[in-house]
Length: 210
Image: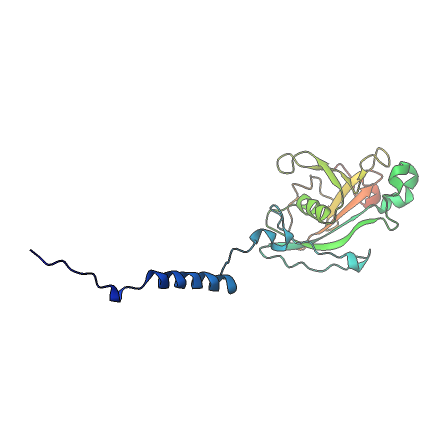
């Protein structure tokens, strides 16, 4: 009959020692910040798929003074400004409830420099700066397929100052004849949104534009 082997417990690590070691590792991880699961959703307060980084030029006053945003992944930069200066001479055509919406200098948004991604449009930048600046903006239509039509900015809408009034936009001084949501941006573009009281003639534009 084969003699029974007696286990050698001298070379085994006691269970109590293993447990103490495990507790020590957990304690060290908590003290020295080994938990890398920081809140990644709070990065720079960016929500949704917004790509452009808007520079806050409010301290520069109404004259603008644009500065450049640091946008990682951006493919270009452009400037944008919004004004309703034509209404300064046509306040009498506005309803009494709308007169107070016109700033003293007619500038709703002083010139800002923004970064944008490849493929973005004039409308994309407008929507973003209005959202960031808490400036109301309303449009109809599809921003992608048929083209968006901007009805109002800053609660000033088309026809508020007569049948020929509404919003027009220019890029580098030219007024495109298509929807702003179809107008792709290029690096260095200068966008201006202006309220017209005469179908664009008073802002240097002519012809219909969405």
